[in-house]
Amino acid sequence: MTQPRDSLTAMMQAALAAADPAQAIHGRLPDCKKLLVLGAGKAAAAMARAVEQQFSGSIRGAVVTRYGHAVDCQHVEVIEAAHPTPDANSVRGAQRLLQLAGGAADDEQVLMLLSGGASSLIAYPPAGVELAEIQAITKQLLNGGSTIGQLNTVRRHLSQIGGGRLAAACAGAGLTTLVISDVTGDVLHDIGSGPTSADPTSVGDVLALFKQFEVTPSDAVLAHLRGPNGETPNAVPGHVELVATPQQALVAAADVAEAAGINVLNLGAFIEADALETAKVMAAIALQIQQYQQPIRTPAVILSGGESTVTVRGEGIGGRNVEFAMGMVQALHGSRDIVGLAIDTDGVDGAAEVAGAWFDSGSLDAANAQGHALAEYQARNDGHRFFAATGEQIVTGPTLTNVNDFRAILVR
Image (cartoon, rainbow, N blue to C red; front, side):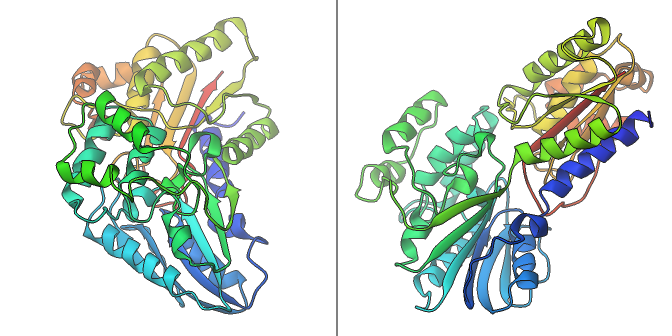
């Protein structure tokens, strides 16, 4: 068998390749002569460039992506905005998409390119609600450990473009949405807060989440929610198609492992538990495989995706993948021959320009020898600084796609 980290790197690269925007949209473009391209998400600009390369007719439009994730497009305007907390460009980008959608020509087909991150990138508060309050609510829910479904239930209802409202703005024009999913279970109304998908949730759900996470909304937010535009559409026009998913990325990684003679335990992309608790369970499974050859025999790799959560208690620089990796460092201490990685597939874990980190059975001893006390970093939610100090960061740069978390643990 090749070196463990080389094997895991090959699996990671296969997972990312499976979500490549050009590959994802190949053969899926509408059969028409004119396209009005709209888009939002971390992969939106790369998807738009792929459309320009693959479509032979007339193209115009605009997409909104994260700062640093833009690529050159000839016919589609690229707007950059902030993630995970929206900024003024998020509002400007949303307004531009709505303007284009409302002005679609009779002979144009509207093509929406949607990927993870769109909830923040095209945040557009309701009339009378300040962007600063949307930012504060987003931060409180994120730091409180909300799942993406819970967060996006709130964001859809506090938006002039989410929850199917962009589809409604297309005013009868033919609409196709191609989606790269970053959401557990590929729930369409949660991906980017579903700007072109019907929303089954209600204002009542939002108010219940405010109570659960101790959010105190302003009078303006409450007035909107209780007003005539508080509810999102429960039916919208158009066709929505998934073109890349977390499960496809895991299968691609599994294929690489199996070709190398490594047994695979694919735990899937439905994991949304606390990052540290997830690490405890994953480490226990790895140790069970190593000691008892169950549920599979070594050499083995445990693959998983999804989107774990973090309850932020400190002021460190972290993300859910490095939080998980710190948990693995702790849980694997005293074992042997286990190595793994955890990354966010967009190349940005949390708000840092770092994808994630490596960890192995000897990570804690190495950190202690260098004078880095893991418990202190954990107390601060300071995973990025911990792995920067130990030299175990994984930096990919913007991958221009996003199918959420990717974890791989190799057991020998």
